[in-house]
Image 1 (cartoon, rainbow, N blue to C red):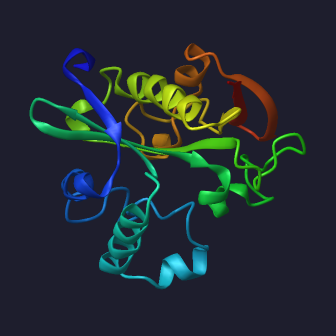
Image 2: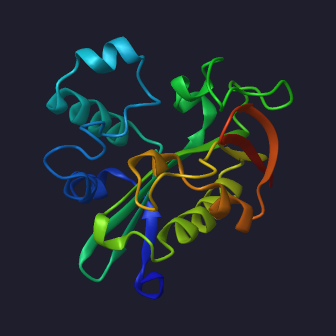
Length: 193
């Protein structure tokens, strides 16, 4: 599957493909990729349409909040990547992704890969690996000095919804190393660019 992939930054001209990929329910129980962007209370109070509108406004405002992948049939995958400051809830001190002192959340050179959404039929074919590789290049090209992730060591099922943060094995293969383990099963991993 990854041979026929196109991966590009999610710019406003691709917002319709983002909506198509996420479908009418907004992926991952209607999240619309707002989980790390909005405080839990606010996110919980929003309807699916309001979450979609929030994300579409973010896409329109730029810079691109992540990368979108297409195969010959259309959009198949998404990876949220950008400066840590763009995903404030990812920086919460109670999370596995809590920033370390040498890579603070307000440093524009510290980036994060915070989540993925891959269409069901495309899972298990290496798309996460392709997205991470493209993300490393994208971060490097845009001035990141550090790229971090807080994936899951193991999931109950290979297609588990919990894998929206990615798999530790995918990041290890891309050269990321564990720099902290603030929660079981969820390392904070880093690639110095």
